[in-house]
Length: 528
Ligand code: TZD
Ligand code: CA
Image 1 (cartoon, rainbow, N blue to C red):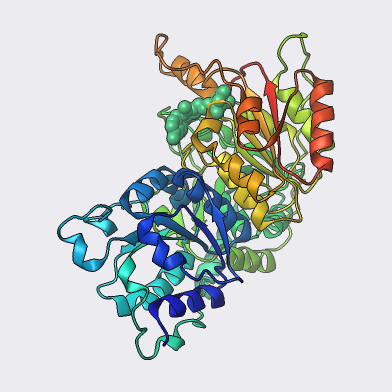
Image 2 (image 1 turned 30 degrees about the vertical axis):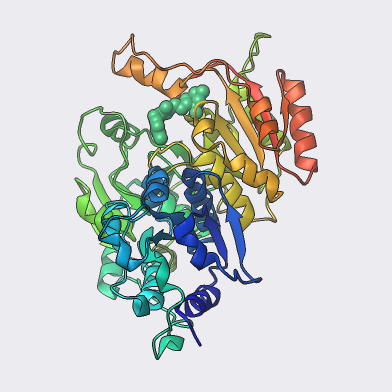
């Protein structure tokens, strides 16, 4: 007999979701029964780590990732991670076990009384099928919803007595369904874009995470070269959309209204691609645009288009649109922008290392196609200045600033991209929110190099406390943490490096090995 269970696994198999990131409970056991040999189960010890790993896996593979959580408590633990998945357009298909249908009403243990309500508003779609027979179809819908532009997380609650029920007639049509979308602007829209870009005296490009997400980095380069434009990375960067040593590269825009206007003041036209307009952070009021400047926005997300406070937006497929623009635009005869000068080495005083030095050593020793998963908030600026990134998919940072992404996501990214070295650069504050992912890296031998920058404090909050003139806030320091002991406790080979030489040595050894390694580096605190 074909069951809801076998039909659902067939859908997952045919749609390529054969890796299950999970943390099980009694409600999930019937789903895990007879777990097929062609699937792999990646156990995370806390749901924040489970969702973070799946998020990294989805972002790095560009494909939906499957998650199985335990009812309300498991879902709740994973929800902080959903803030990042939502804003990074990460296609996560999250399922959770529910009590048997007849026991939800009496609120038996582990009944999630209003399951679809719980993960809102951090999912695109949240659902509990009305009957067991609808579970396979709902699962198919979940996959296609997650994967449609703009991609994002979805949630499905499944009562555990559903799995053993007979699948309905016609279920076999679901597994091989393909749902595609087209997103090329109409000819007239394209003409208008080309006209405005050609007419501009001094245009500038601002690129966001969806350029990298749609693997359009090379098209962004061609566009910048055609129009001889400088290219900025949109504020609060969660990915790297442009090679960082290209002559057009200008760095990451500040995440403040006034700061952005200041950086773009000399331009008459700003073309934003694949980013919200804009992902501001610190409140610094001012004009949204420099006087006399126009803004054009190309995005795959209708929500981003609608909520922007200025500019004209076009909702379209990023890759298709960039390709069409590259074909249609004539070469400009402006001068090519000049490359930014490389950052000078900093002077070490002999005490704690500066993060800049750590990054210089990384830039020197890491493979040029290394993937950086970064979650050390006070060192973002220094990192972008000092570490070259060339390839698509080279950088991931929590898109909503929700800490607990970095360490697990590094594990998920490495699982999705075994051919490239993943290096996690994690603050001593951030590391604690997703620390259990170290265990998964150790048990599954996922060879991430974790670099823990230990400055003993929530460095970015120290800076923010200055900005907000809060000089006396409690709870900003995190002394007394021994990450080598913690790493060893979770089964990861761990070493401390105190000098440039020790760090270079530890990093070289870690890169040469085929196992996860944690390097704890005591550092000074710098400003973001
Ligand atoms: N909790 C969660 C889940 N996300 C957050 N973003 C914060 C708290 C607040 N927070 C920040 O926004 S930055 C930060 C905190 C606690 C400090 C992180 O410290 P770190 O990095 O050691 O990882 P730096 O380099 O010392 O800033
Ligand atoms: Ca810190």
